Image (cartoon, rainbow, N blue to C red):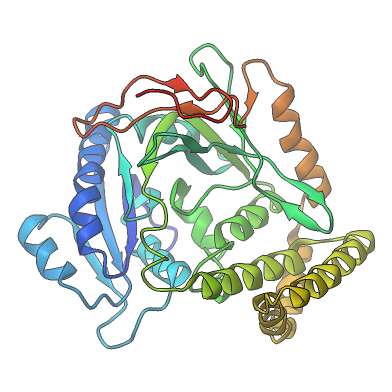
Length: 368
């Protein structure tokens, strides 16, 4: 384990994985290739680290035989899976280099994925930079610059913008959060803030919460449209959790993030009113997972109060200020709101070169 604060120049790719042999067989070669391309382009060392979450398949033996240079960090046999946040945190702590690309095991990279991200860290303010994410199966752009708004008592995080011609536009571009599935982090800043909140295990909202924490501490998070990846969605959660379990976990963590980061009495009152309405509506249609999520979140109120006090003591930026700053990205030249009529389509090519962009018209997929 590399001590905190002693990172060497270079880039580590950290891939959290649970029973991921089949996915790694498909996607790991793209990460290894991207690491080699980074070394050639940036003249700095790289490594690939599998942060394994107590897998019961033959991931370790397969890696040793097929990718002996890939490091394997395990949470321990017999311990059982502990979830994304603690597994990713362990991988970042184990990483040798100053920049750490945390990426899911069901994501394909290309040779040009990493260098545009690394270039941002000449600024000491940068905490993380997020790649542009396409759907692996359809090629539709699904992850870009993340916008945010406080509406109907909740923080909306699903509006996005993109930059159709980044070579003709002037960056950098800001994002509300850097996804834990395909973003480059400053290792020392990540560890100094405590990494992903491990109480959010097994998954969900840990990347949003960490991003809000980083923004509030005065750091900056960016989106880089010249860095692309392709995500095979629902490959890791669906085999382990039912839809009802996944919704319950997501709603619990969504509440935890809100109760940590909402700041004003008006925000709290609006949130409480809409949460009550949501619970009553859910009861009418038999969706009891929201009630279970609330109960689980309430049990953690003492821990939440302590974390809120700690956050407020060092906070440099208010949530409302942050949301306004991110919203201004839409007013910049060369920026478009990502919606059904404007969605770019870019298919992944196994040769390492993706096909040229197309645009979906009126929500229909463009021909590839």
